[in-house]
Image (cartoon, rainbow, N blue to C red; front, top):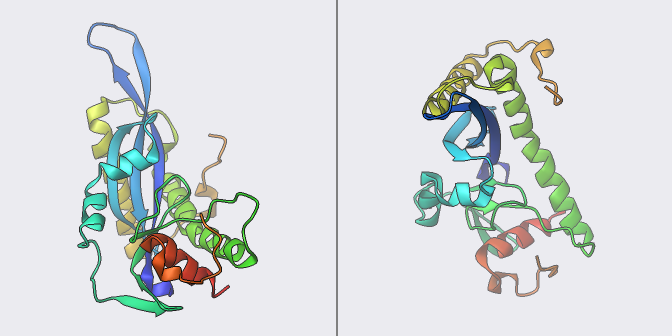
Amino acid sequence: MAELLVGVLFMLWVTALEKALCNPRAAFRLSKKRGVVDPKYCFTDVFIGWPGRVHDARVLADSPLYGLGQNGTLFPPDKTEVINGVRIPVVIIGDAAYPSLEWLMKPYADNGWLTPSQRAFNNNLSSTRMTVEIAFGRLKGRWRILLKRLDMKTQNVPLAVGACCTLHNICEIHGEAFDDNWWPNDNDDDGDDGVAVAALHPAVAMRNAISLNF
């Protein structure tokens, strides 16, 4: 199953400096970067520039990644695995802020009634999502500009952040050492047990089928 989990979805908040044309005083603005990280800490997809107040799901829905996922062209259609009678395609892992989709796996909503297998599934999904935490930390550790306010025009923020991601990937691909001193300081559904699981929404059925293995 591990080879079907090819990426982790996340949001990066970036503080940019936006200068008003008719006001000499500067206003701060939070921008969002939506990205996908692979198991080797490389960014495989980035989408930068939405205002920070916009919900993560809205940012995803407006990105090219969403369109590719919805029309079935994001991943090779023949790369699937059958688990407990349900065909599981290649998926990206997301957190609770995102919708359940056939190509986007999210945890069960913890309403206090999760089964042991569903809790185990959530724990394993959370452990897998640590990949993005590490990649995010390594990105900010290498490119310290992301730890502070970006004193530039907002239209230049996507270029700056995108450049940092590209340089980060080059470092990771070539095995560039990462000094531990560079780590940034954080301060700077249904609970069915599988019966008629394939009759559920495809994304829910996929998640339920996998959870039965825990």
